[in-house]
Image (cartoon, rainbow, N blue to C red; front, side, top):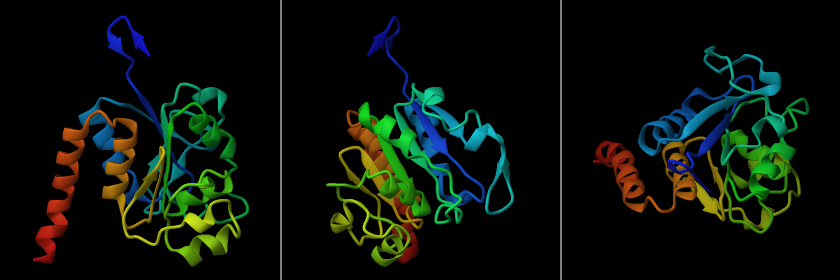
Length: 202
């Protein structure tokens, strides 16, 4: 879809709840905004302030209802130790709304649980913090037979998942799904992130 000045700028919503994991969103949000000119917005329940695991406070741009986020091209669910709890917010409607219009939906660490509950892993390869870990929290979820026990992010038809230890490949896979035409930049981004780990292993 294009406007008067060319292709429409894409919008990414980053979803946080209380005790969100500080380490899991930065590479994605900063790379999307700085390198891909993405409009990045923070979302939280009721549009109210949420605190991170380290105590940092975030005032979100928007609440979580699907109507307020109809313009999203993508949504990323950030992990929190509150996601496994029964009181965790129900966000399946929002995630499915983004997916059904061809958007990218991703989850990292415990942020993969809302995707499993929403049925977004059905028929898709995916990963999380371990097969037993996710099965213990969402028993018998649709698509559980396609779980991949890998240490990096997995992308299958615009659904992206990652263990909490993989924010770098989560960012790369997510932006690769959102901007598949930017292959050269994505390769450079992946190589840059990989340098740190290659150097530390030598």
